[in-house]
Image 1 (tube, helix red, strand yellow):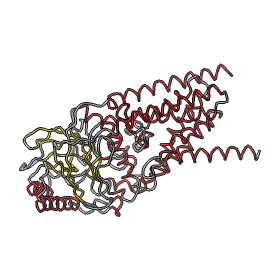
Image 2 (tube, helix red, strand yellow):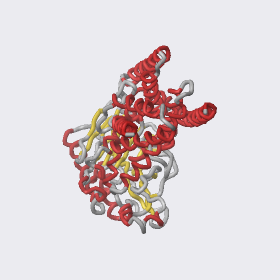
Image 3 (tube, one colour):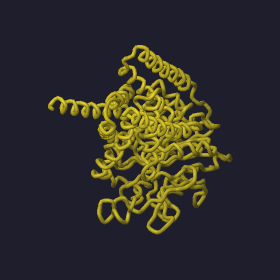
Image 4 (cartoon, rainbow, N blue to C red):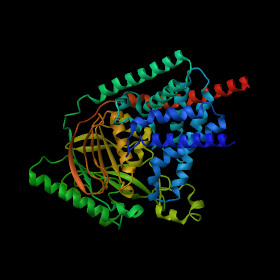
Length: 509
């Protein structure tokens, strides 16, 4: 009995450790060599277990992985940490169970990889719009496989890494020499081809054209204040006005070429600048001093009573109001909006700190911007949206020539969240084949090249400005085109394989 109990505890500990190892491949730690072995370890743990035990081991794996990666949620509310980790681990529970169900099928590594991919697709959609923040693909951005993002997208790269993990498990577990050699050869082939494609893509020259000159502003916000980081009304707008003045003064004092536009971050105005007189004056003053249009990140009123929207506003020089807006589509549950608000507020009064209910936008984040007598299509992605394939892909599919990210990470200063977001942004630059200019209130602004190379980055928690030359991008990459198809194909194949595995298991019994 003690031996059995000891074996159970050992497997449980190994599952948690494998999850931790896989999680350490994510930023800010970035120990990516642990990811494929971590995936393989879960497969080895569940392949000979009963389905229920396999599900339990998958859940423990998830507890290890998500505790390692998303505990930064505590800055919003401590109760959210165990709840979110417990829920997200349900997806790895399904993964462990699914891998067990297909373990005896021909081509089991392929079906296991599809199950991993299908679970990521599910997590990115369910519930409340999903939470795709932790994916295998994000760990690839600093590896030889990074360039494959351009060709098979984030979903394809997650599938590729999962397949490598399944093949490694097959090499370890297979007793037949011929099968072991076949699995090892396939693993080496997958990694070799992926690395060759990746290296060729990421070592192509960075864009040199200076089609649009952009000054990004990081106004600085008190990140030590946690969920109260935005401070007093209009204080964050004052900060961005001050930093814009500093940028203009530096440009004129040094004789540097003036920018074509200025980029402010998400929530750079915490009160609607169209409706509020004082905030309106701060924004128009900044535009008048810069003598350039500003892409403003604003909190706007409506569309209904006691509702708000997170909005990007293209505000031309000399105009009294913006002539283009984009409303953020993917909102943070319990951070920007409260599901079942009427029922939960009386039970959890702490949720009142979320404020008014945010309402998502419905249109792609592409703005037609008048710049130096030209019309330029700007693709705008706001903070949390970076993790959503459809939202990011919609920008380039709808003709975005430039990609820009507006973000407010002030609440998460000193945690791993800003570095995870930066890692995701690098993946999006490679996937889309576009440069990405990033402006945040206080955490990691800069420029990322299409190769994923970081051309420049500000320090966390400070105020700063930088000016970059951006090249207009064209076309839609293969990764953007095929990634959705890979995702939904993996869901279908995973479902069919699990059903086939269940049927085969019933026949054996």
